[in-house]
Length: 354
Image 1 (cartoon, rainbow, N blue to C red):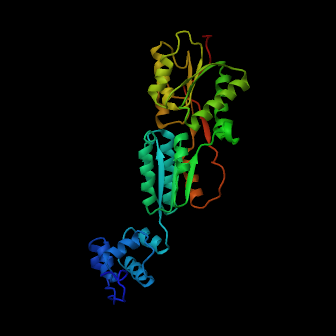
Image 2 (cartoon, helix red, strand yellow):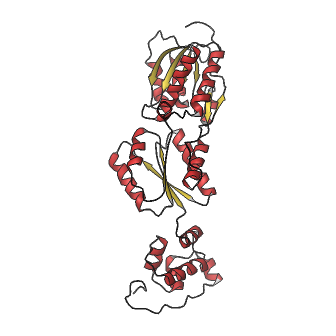
Image 3 (cartoon, rainbow, N blue to C red):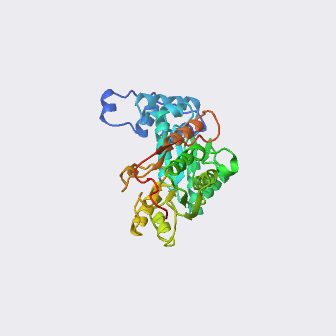
């Protein structure tokens, strides 16, 4: 019977020293820890899971045994002795998209540098039941906190409604038109991109927007509209895509034969890639007849044909700042989405009216 389960005191055997040879032969298990601590393996398991109903003297024996046997991972013994976990659950979705995947990557590096492990949980935003099941699963994990990375309105709402039982940070790009805190991408990045095209003589534009449920897509479209107005330009239309190259191709392929835009401003690089192929299939040259730009600067953008002019986004900084805030850093609005204009061969001067 376990000492913690007995109603009367039970003598606990003195811990047996673990020899150097034994420790080097194989990694210690909870059974080894239980033997050295003089308790059952169930007690060790409960301790590792964070159970608080263990007698202080028993906890001390388990902690001593964990340290004596150098039980792995070391973070577990050290953090549980302090009564806290060193794991963070990162909830995300659309992990195949550039932005979410790069943000998670930055968060993972920041967590590791702070002595934490990032457990990534991907959610299917099209299935509300699976979202709820995943959130319930996270509630059962022994984590120090939850980092909820929301790209869409639906996921932001799901996270906001969740009853997290540990510290949680919901990070989503704020909507420029609603919150009054325009991102750097909106105030500097896209205006710089549009100014570059204006300097090349472009006056008639086409915009390929991202999905309207993404705040990032709305912000990029809003910045495009503002630049069109500020420069007195002509927008020949706004067509929608889903971030994929196929959607960019389909959007341009469906345009009427007489469309007159000399510059296509796509909300991400993949849609720009599809747009360039569709333009070529229509007998138009990039950039001689139509210039094309993107956003994100994915690694492949420099190797498009022609290489793509785009805005390089610092997604890594967003992931890092989210972890820092979750772990107790200064709380503020989401950080500025840093961007840098990268000029390549997909943009050029207007040669003739179209």
